[in-house]
Length: 189
Image (cartoon, rainbow, N blue to C red; front, side, top):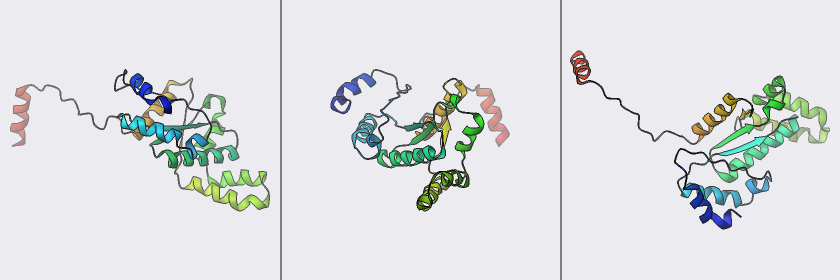
């Protein structure tokens, strides 16, 4: 629907100020991001209208196999959409903090050990290769607990960093009294 009505979307978005954030909560169907052009077309239109775009992939962790699947889905979306990307682990308020720490900076050894116990020997080489993707640090995750304002601010900080928000803003120079300028110039000579 959005792709067929881009004029309507543009008119709606341009009613807001330049400092507003828009969040598009898109369907979780990975094919929309991984190999169909729908999301790429939407992102291209938004960029042409002057918007800075940041893809956010959210996933809920419950075991290493799903985590590895999330890494692969994130990589696929990053490659297809060609956008600054922030991977957000949502619903962190529902996960034990110790369990969460295992996935924020997981070792390949931990992931492989856990996957090995759940798969047959036939799949071990594939599990090893997939776990090695994690070693390249191409995908990192930012935890978000909707109940914690600091957590949300951290996600926004990562988004600002990804889209270089504020890079084009000139620093504000306050008025300096002429006598201070004269004193400083005299001291420098």
